[in-house]
Length: 400
Image (tube, rainbow, N blue to C red; front, side, top):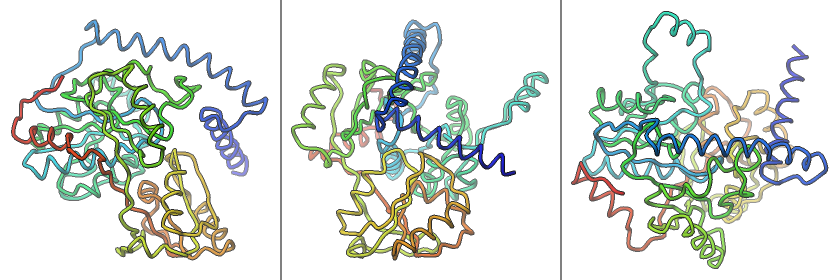
């Protein structure tokens, strides 16, 4: 048991080291050596991506049409650009205006089917399992451990909209149409999913770290070349309030090299309130002023989250970072709260995405809150809402 625990800790350290190399947070000799190795694999990944894209462009592989509006939300990079709030707001707007919406997700970091079950199904020619219904539009049905973080977060915040998880988004879409009469499908993190033809594409770019070091995985954070931005009909520049106006203009000019027609929409993530994790209690953000806070985070870009707390004049006395989508153990949480109390923390604050990975029966040693965030457009003309409004009246509209 001790051996496996040590092995697990070493694996976490190794994963953390690789993440630091990818994000250029380390520059020592060891980091430079691994950066060279990873860049070699990046060239291989680039050609795989190009070959796959060409296969769909030349129709060697065929993207499927499902006969309904398909809104694709995604990004070119790994890590947090704020997709989930955009998916949430888009789906809610369309649903409130009469469309039957379903959200489709691949369920990243969710529980996967065992390999041996897949082999048995292949040998016996049995049907694949149906998609996981995280929400049936009435209630949340499964946990984040099974479905992944984002689907549960969406299910909790979109109580009237089905949320369906499957790696095969075509199958998930067919299920949503058949069982929930969906006429709009919103794909969460679907920009690289070429098997399903989108009606229009929303690309998110983090203004504070748009494209990392410009390299593809595994050396950088890009999932595909920058030239593939041309697929997007709308490009949202998230966290626009956290960069200087001149830097934002430089970013816009850079994007125009690859996409001259997309509408560029600066947007910001706005903190709304604090909500207690172990009970339904909401606090105004002004309550943070002067409070000694410990921060727990397992997201890709925790700096923005911590900046929000500092802007509300909270005193950050203890901060603990885990890698993105880290599933907290009870031992880790107990150790964190012990350290937080020693540091003099009065409250613990985490992100809403991290909160869905906290077990319901966990008893915190300090008041434990998550920060509710929502997306807001900086566009005074509300161009995106105008397009969504047209979609509510024209069920056959296609853009691009």
